[in-house]
Length: 128
Image (cartoon, rainbow, N blue to C red; front, top):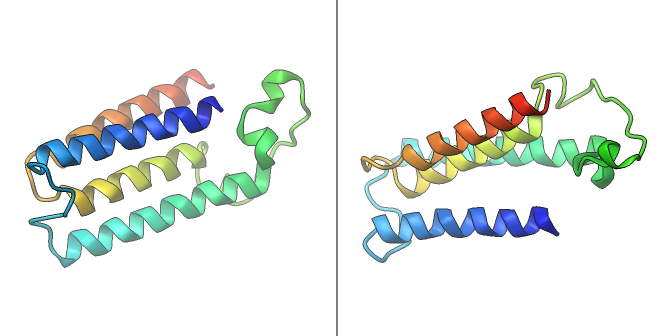
């Protein structure tokens, strides 16, 4: 439940940021075909990584079941063959893609994704 609560909070912050900095509109303005195509590609790639992690580990593995005494098999296949933390990478790809679509080329387009990158990097470091 905490996972869903935090994801809803994160999504609301993103929407609020875009609404506030979009002068009360959630319609992407100012972008071009490159930012739209790149954003969609990043979101699709990110969600593919996230779904692959769920497929490989199952719900218990994704939600740190090993920390609660469940046996979770170590996985070396895709997507773990590409990234040490593929779920974090997938989340970041999706966040960067979302802001490429919604805010590029405005001056603030990279600020929230950069902050999120810092959070996920710290999380990956602390998870070692």
